[in-house]
Image 1: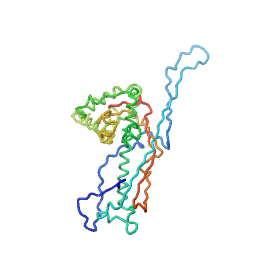
Image 2: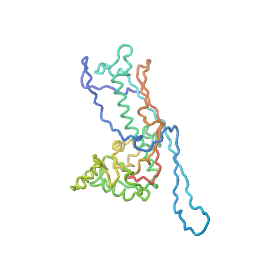
Image 3: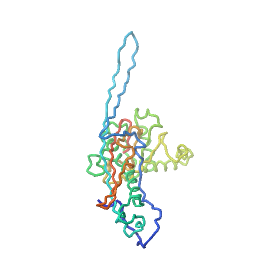
Image 4: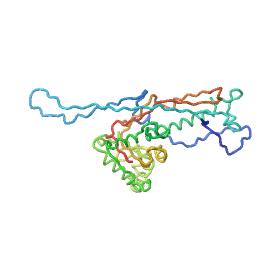
Amino acid sequence: MASALTTSFSHTYGGKEILEPIFYSPQVEGLDPFAVYQVLDNVKTSASIYIPGKLQKILREKSSCGFSAVGTAAISDKTVTVKKLALNVEMCEDEFDSTIFAEARRAGVMIDDIRGTVIEDMVRNVIVASMREDIPTLVWNGDDADADSFYGIMDGYFQLMLENTASLAHIETMSTHETAEVLDSDGALTALRNIYAGQGAVLEAIPETQKRFYVAPSVYNNLLTSLENTGASAGIERIQRNGNQGLSFRGIEIVKMYTWTAALADTSNPQDGNISPNAIVLTIPENLVIASDVRSPESEMKVWFDEKDEKVYFKSRFMLGAQIVHYDLVALGK
């Protein structure tokens, strides 16, 4: 196992230097699923989701005395199964020999213990940023039948949708709005219109304020261009939502999914080729379930120093799983 951070400096360390502010490499952080979707917490192995069926056409004309029961609704269930995830990272202080960060090290026999130093802060910050990208990426793109050591951990929302296409409210083929996977002019607008029109009676009956369009950034930007190109004040005003910069389509908030771009461009992703890089999902947040034994995985981290190995170790363990409650409340642009 390699050190979490290695050094590759463009200058030669010349003795005592002053540590300036540290500028971390940009890392895409996705929407926190634990803050956006429906959370089932304290799940150690699996949890059942119970779904009462619908009662329909239960009204009858009253013609005589008596009681005659009409109508039956079955209660079905779904299971969300969680997988045990592990994070194991180590850091050897030797990586910082003869560098500016030598000034941040402890002294004497404790020199190898980076705990409480700026070096530990750097490692911890990099780990947390990575988890905030990895978790939403896995929750959406995972496929537990895939051989990849990351994507194969669990089934994500895209995989669940692809396995249940016959039950979805609508499927929009995004290739009809693209040229070489680049959205055509007004491609996003046309796709959103089609998905809205085809969402079906069940999804359409839900108030617009409760629904969300989850979209790849390319969709958001393409739609923004369409609105700007109208040249009309009404189009420009629609760019503003509640006084803040943002888009909505026919009263439905549009949420930009930042992690989709990199994930759907990753050839290791099992959804590469199955889901367009210009993906769109219309549903309600409560319909997307995330299960775990903790509410904040990135805060579940243990750090310790091993005297024998002379390394500091970072460890995290948590359970994670995803499920979709009602497929007829999902419209997918793939």
